[in-house]
Image 1 (cartoon, rainbow, N blue to C red):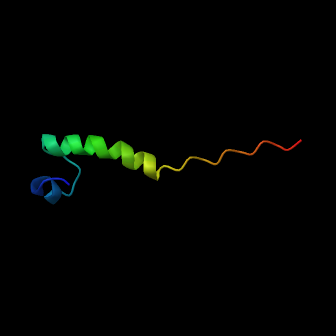
Image 2: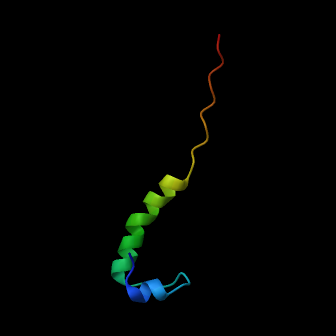
Image 3: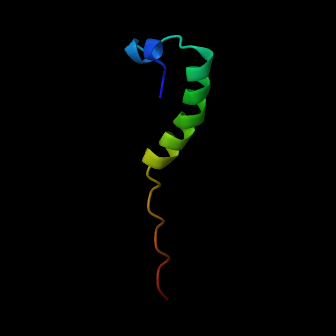
Length: 46
């Protein structure tokens, strides 16, 4: 969770070093979890 100062800041702007580090850690995880990989096309049956 961001600190109170950064949480009150609504627009994406400079945050304190601790919140910046937290954002760096959490953003890739969120991006991987939300990005859906396209389904692998099935190989044609022979």
